[in-house]
Image 1 (cartoon, helix red, strand yellow):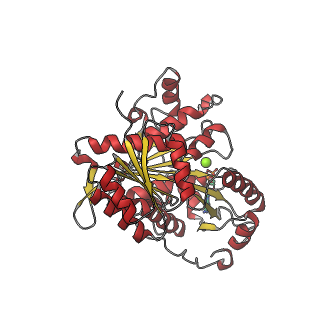
Image 2 (tube, helix red, strand yellow):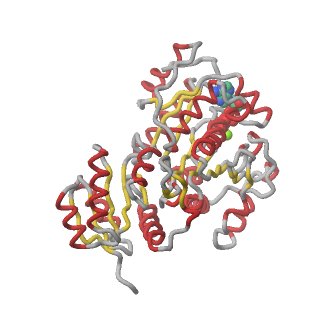
Image 3 (cartoon, protein in one colour):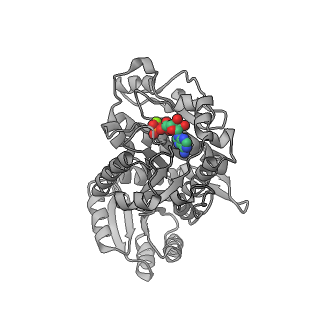
Length: 407
Ligand SMILES: Nc1ncnc2c1ncn2[C@@H]1O[C@H](COP(=O)(O)OP(=O)(O)O)[C@@H](O)[C@H]1O
Ligand SMILES: [Mg+2]
């Protein structure tokens, strides 16, 4: 057996360092040094020449990224990996531009941390593959987001049905594809009633069911053969056909599947059924961002409150968990500030009620394609731009009518 690859841990917070060291002590890696930002970190990097620089990125970001650069100058052969509480695409993209080979959202699970350390190091040592690079804004070659180990997984969740989860997931996947030209896969985890394919007007030949059957027989097969390509360029792993209600996917299969997909796609978007079942928990665990969708009626808001409390108790913070209010119906509408007050959590994004949405649902063409000027489409496009790092977070635009209900 070879030696455990040495890691230098750079983090301003002593408790984080202790936590990470604790996690890594059970992995085939060795923390050989730790430091705060600054001169000490650079000196240790030069002296130890570790295989991996594990750097916690915190506000102020400029200082954090400067530290990352200095460390790479001191230990040019090391693989820089960033860990951060921030799950937005913008920070991940900046980290990548500053040389990071892996990105992991804090606090990490043991398996996700080990996965990123292993994959990022292996990729760094492998010969560069031109297909792993795309042209940056200034014409320079930058790595594809999927090559940043531990890519983006956006899980759309909401404890109620009919609040617009599938509407958001399908449109968001297309929006991200349009705006980044990166590879996007949309996964329908709703085993029995998943309607992603219907809403996208697709008739997939192979579905999640075929993949899960193969998983039951042993290894998870390469996932490509189970995907269908939507004309907008989004790959879809559709749910099984409705006549086969009953068999629920194994949560381990969902976790393994999402891990495999993050290595192959720049963005993974996951649609879930409205229930806290084990395979949904797996999809939430693997998520870098959870979009928790509620409609603006009391029954959905109360369920959202319970879900948010549960997730916060399991360590999801505001960077990873975002509350979305979708005005799916315009009856009994509660204002966004009342939603925030009732749930006890800030509203991150509002989606307007838009009559063009049910029309697009009926016709099997998501609204960002059928009617990109529609208010709903505009709001999803802006959200996609932010989450994928393709654009800044825009202030929510105030819709014209029913202004009372929107920020
Ligand atoms: N913002 C909206 N405005 C109008 N109708 C909407 C909106 N969002 C969703 N809908 C409609 O609500 C219904 C349920 O949406 P869906 O995305 O299937 O919900 P879920 O996946 O949460 O069960 C669909 O018929 C859809 O067209
Ligand atoms: Mg749905």
